[in-house]
Structures are given as structure tokens and as C-alpha cells.
Image (cartoon, rainbow, N blue to C red):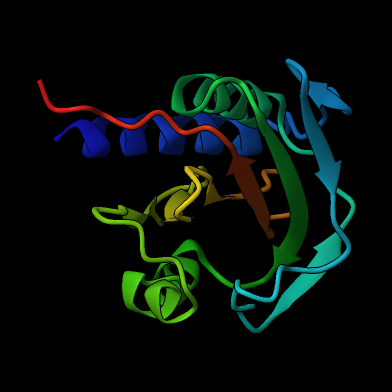
Length: 174
């Protein structure tokens, strides 16, 4: 249930940020964590057909959410890489493509990962997806995909954010 609440909050942030045209944001650092754009999707992230690379800045709301995620999931050590695309595809196309099965086959096998959730209705259609993987050295990578219709162009704006964190706290039995 907790995952569904977090997913709903991310979806709301993504949809509101994209539909309101708030795609400008701060660049550089997110509270000491490196934030940078990349030139291409990472090799372990499948590319949906019909996406065109775009020069969109990561929305401020997404940066703030990622900052909180890094702080809460590690000891503040992490980096965020992102890339943005536009597409004439729909939110439904995106959520149908980025399935838990497809992403697990690509190596994103975090236990209980939520996958994608989206809403295609109205002009504020949007989606958010969460996938993750961990390594034996208490490090992990998390992939967050925000997508929403741009109210000005009616195109789908898609943001891929890869969050790499170190020193993930482990729970100890009491």
C-alpha cells in the first residue's frame, strides 16, 4: 500500500509539472548530489520506438523529489543522470512498453518494484514508472520515468532519470 501512495504522489507531481509547462528547473547539483544530462539511454534501458531526443531540462518538482529520495535511501551519496524525449505516442503506449517483465529482462529486478502507472484521460495525461536494481556492495540504481502531455505541443514529454545511490542502509533484525 505504501508503494501505491508514493507512486500516486510521483504521478501527480509529474502530471502537474508537465501539463503546466514547468519544464525549466535548476541545473547542476541537487543538494550536493551530481545531476547531469546524458546523450543516450543507458544500455540496460530499452528504447520505445517513436521517441525523439529533446533538450528539456529536468522539471524542478522532479529534482526536488529525487533529492528527497537520495537523502532517504542512502546517506546523501548519489548521482542523477537524465535524458528527455518527445513522442507522438500516448501514455498508454509508454506504460504498455515499460512493463515489469520487459524491464526485469533488461536487469531491473528490484523486489516489489512498482513498474508503471498512468492516466490517459484528458489533457493532463501522464505516467510515472519505477524500476530498480541493487548490487552486493549496498549500492543501487533506480530508474524513474516521468511522462506527460505538453499542453502547448500536445506531444508526450518523457524524462528518464537514473539515480545511482551508495551506502543504502540495511535493516538489521532486532
